[in-house]
Amino acid sequence: MRQIEGGITAVSGVSAFGLKDGKKGLAIILAEGPAAGVFTRNKVIAAPLIVTKEKLGTNGGFLSAVIANSGNANAYTGEQGLKDAKEMTRLLAEKIKADDKFIAVASTGVIGRKMDMNWISSHIEPVLSSVSTTEEGSVGAMRAIMTTDLVPKVFACEVKTDAGSYRIAGIAKGSGMIEPNMGTMLGFVYTDAAVASGQLQKCLTAAVNKSFNMIVVDGDTSTNDMCLLTATGKSGIRITDGKSLEEFQNALDLVLIELAKMIAKDGEGATKLVESTVIGAKTKEDAKLAAKSIVRSPLVKTAIFGNDPNWGRIVAAAGYSGADFDQTKITLSVSDGTKTANLVKNGEIIEKDPAVLDELKKIMSAKTIFIKIDLGAGPETATAWGCDLTYDYVKINAEYTT
Image (cartoon, rainbow, N blue to C red; front, side):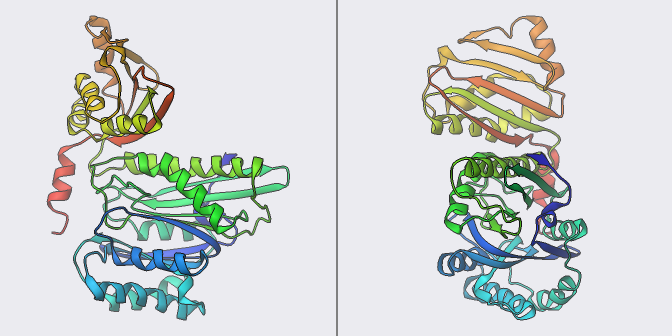
């Protein structure tokens, strides 16, 4: 398994492109095959998700294309929003001569505003005319779905097997309103392995639980979170069970984890990536609760932004997470990937050593901070990713619609 260039169009059977016009964007991705999806758990769910989820649930789990827009979430828009989402799939289906039941639709942007369908309909043809299997096609689609993102998110890998090679690649957008609790803001993942839709769903759900469900920027779960996975089967490598399934799952996990880390690193106003690893938890759920609680905590996030060695906030965040443990058994360290400051061992504070505190201050100025906490309660572990909380986050979100 190795990382490759080319984005989603490095996957056989995938072509894409997108256009950006101010805050509005439109992306189209063409790829036929079995498909799976995960969607927001927010009870206010955007119209495109309702439409796409219904299609995958009734069409046998198959997609021919995705049409996605940025600038308008088409969320909390009532019956008209549903009509507009369906119309987007119909317009694309008509252009590519496909059945609209196999067209997925996704949106991201401001909540509570009606879609500008004249803009959508007038931009479908220009996007389609530039759809390609080159890396430029992947980049175009990526940039078209960006909102407050500062950088595009893409990751692709190739898996070599005894029977040959196949690829998995994904693009994602997300920078704010992020604690996915399902998938990501928008994520489109493709493979040219041959995988049945039922197995795709199991693999996607498992990968999402290790990746997108373990990132926090601001603790808000979006109305529009969606991640889709389509298998074109063009490589001819069939994924069934045993070793082939294990290899596929590992590669899919890698792609989604790397995309998730990119989203966390590009959090609105963020200057640092934070990785929180919890070991020694009694249950897997406890490990996840504690790891996410640490990267979600505004006090931890602001301390990291200010290079403040206030490690007590980390212990406090684990304590209110809901995880079951004894505080006298905690071991805690913070690292920049090169230097490590050991702060607590089996409940005993060792940070009071001036040398340790000096080391911690240096570590806190790094661009990536690694937090490791051992709860001393059991065998389970989990890792979550987040970012610091800065002045710019407040500025960006105070002026989001203006």
